[in-house]
Every structure is written in C-alpha cells, then in structure tokens.
Image 1 (cartoon, rainbow, N blue to C red):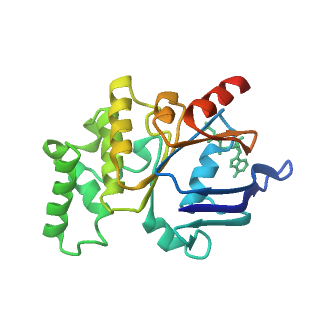
Image 2 (image 1 turned 90 degrees about the vertical axis):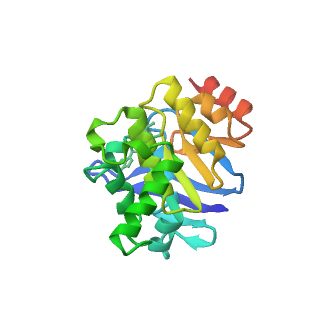
Amino acid sequence: MIVLDEAGVVAPDPGGDVVVLRPTTLTLTERRIAVIGANGSGKSTFARMINGLVEPTEGRVLVDELDVQRDGAAVRRHVGFVFTDPAAQLVMPTVVEDVALSLRRHHRDARERRAAAQRVLDRFGLGELADRSVHTLSGGQKQLLALASVLATEPSVLVADEPTTLLDLRNSRAIGDLLMALEQQVVVVTHDLELAARCDRVLVIDDARVVYDGSPADAVSHYRSLV
Ligand SMILES: Nc1ncnc2c1ncn2[C@@H]1O[C@H](COP(=O)(O)OP(=O)(O)OP(=O)(O)O)[C@@H](O)[C@H]1O
C-alpha cells in the first residue's frame, strides 16, 4: 500500500521556488496504477517520490509502512524503479554482468551470483544474450534487460517511468504484458493510453496536481478533455 499524506515537492530555483507537485493525499492499494498527463505536469516527480529518488519537501510518503524519508535505504530495496531510457541503468559491459550487479547483496559468491543472474535472464527470455555487450541490444531488449535487472532483486513494488516510450508497438505490448503479469504492485507513468487502459486505477496529473483519479476509461477521457 502506498500512502501520500499531503505530500508535495517545491524545488528552489534562481527565479523563485517552483511548485513541482502540490500537496497530494492518496492511498494506492490497487495492483496496477497508471499515471498519465501532459509533459512537465509532475508525473516523474510523483513516481520518483515513491522510491525516494525525490523526497517530498512537505507531507509524507509511506510505502508498505516505510517512510521514504526516514527509511530511505529500506524503501529503495522495497521499491524497484525503471527509467524511460534503459541506458540510464545498464552500467555493466555484458548482459549477465548487469543482472549480477543487481544481485551483489543477495549472492556474495561470484559463481553463485552469475548462476542466479543467468536464471533471471532465462525467466525473461534473455538467456541466450547473457554474454552479449549491452550496447549491441535492440531498444526492446535493453528495456527488458533493465526491467529484469530491477526485478532480479524481487522488490515488493515496481515503479516504471514511461517504460514503453522508446519502443515500437510490438515491444510496448510485450513490456505491457510483462508488467501486467507481475505479482508486485506496479505504478507506471505512461503516455501509452493503451497501457493505462489495462490498469486498475489511473491518476491524471496536470499542472502539478492530481486532477482526476478513477477508472481507466474515465481518466483517459478526462485527460483527452484537457488537451
Ligand atoms: N528540481 C527541479 N527544479 C526546478 N524545476 C523542476 C525540478 N524538478 C522538476 N521541475 C519541473 O517541474 C515540472 C514537472 O516535472 P516532471 O519531470 O515531474 O514532469 P513530467 O510530467 O514527468 O514530464 P514528462 O512527461 O515531460 O517527462 C517540469 O516543468 C520540470 O521542469
């Protein structure tokens, strides 16, 4: 369960403070939550607050009773975060090494760690790419690998910030299928209204506030009415 209690973000700026997200109160218990809205409306900030990448400057954010400010390290272990551009998180030379890096706390022994990483790759259909350089992967394969590396640590909640934006229709659907099949609670920021429509609850963010919160069909029509 994710709880925002009057949680907001104000960023200092030379031209004066910028309200990035107005104080927001919400309880998210659904398994599949989408966040939609215009560019620059505050969606990424909302998503990043859930795993402490951005801290609220007012109010509180609790994830399964962990406070993102007070229990920062525990929250980051509990909440996996996938970025839009997988290049932002694929840091090791080969595919298997990248997943193994995520598992460094789970398996101290290098051989065990590599074997566990290989099992993760097999689970995500990437097993044959284990020794490939991450730079040689297609966009879809990179996004899948980024997701696999995050899920390897078995977080309880997954936050994905526009995970299908750089992908073609086929790969978008594949990533969408994967997200929908996960056991974890998933919060996905997306411009992909087809993906949003598959979620249980959709938040529409506009001008730094949640302006609609409801079923996918109603939320998408509210979003369309704003454009
Ligand atoms: N640290 C900061 N300092 C100043 N302004 C910021 C800061 N962080 C975010 N902003 C501004 O707040 C607004 C919301 O940013 P955010 O990245 O959350 O939007 P978004 O809805 O995810 O946009 P997009 O769809 O383009 O990714 C933007 O106008 C952004 O420039």
